[in-house]
Image 1 (cartoon, rainbow, N blue to C red):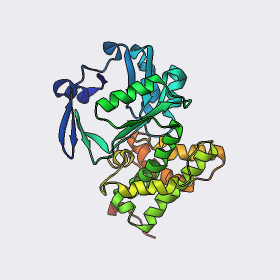
Image 2 (cartoon, one colour):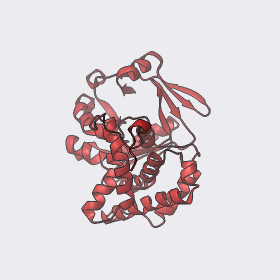
Image 3 (tube, rainbow, N blue to C red):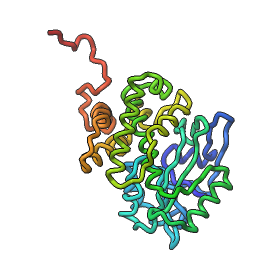
Length: 303
């Protein structure tokens, strides 16, 4: 097992391994190799890609030294575009669709905080066929104690996750409150439902076989989560970091527009969060107040 990491995170992993903090205590993962250079690792059986959505194509272009004759890549990004982006660079045969479910974040260099019991991984061939390579990967995860499944249609699974996390992330980032609050207030609960309904309509317009009852299932899942839960989108925006806004609410808006499907909830969430996203990426002037900024009393005008 090898980790490709950078900076202080890499230094901490090299020194002490990757420490995972859970509700039941800590676990330490010690890779055989930890490096920031794929050439130091060499060809591997499978690459699990864990970068942010806007980094996928650059990562694909850098992973050449990791690729042997039978190496395949499993993207674990949020959204529904990573597999296609990888295939455009590496070729479709190299790519297996994938996703993970977890409430986890980097607590410190070399330390991951994992909340609750919602942890699993799903992957499958893009053409829906069964394959030996996905079965071998599933068996490897199960030997490691990780819940891994191969769904009948990985595209449906990706859209089912999109349907849940994107409204949760967008509404959470706008309101700055966790899921326990979002689901308990009728007004924000309805925003979550409307966001899911729009994704259902966009997905079906693209031929994705999202099942009846997907929205109800999604809301039931949100109702089952730890009340303190938040998404990575919300945490990044709250902390002033670049986020995956374009791959979350942005992609729903873009694909909806292309298909002629209205997405007013996601348009509102995207527009509300865009100033903060632009500020985090340095493309909004520091002299201009962004959404959420408090204008000092001396700068306010009255009419």
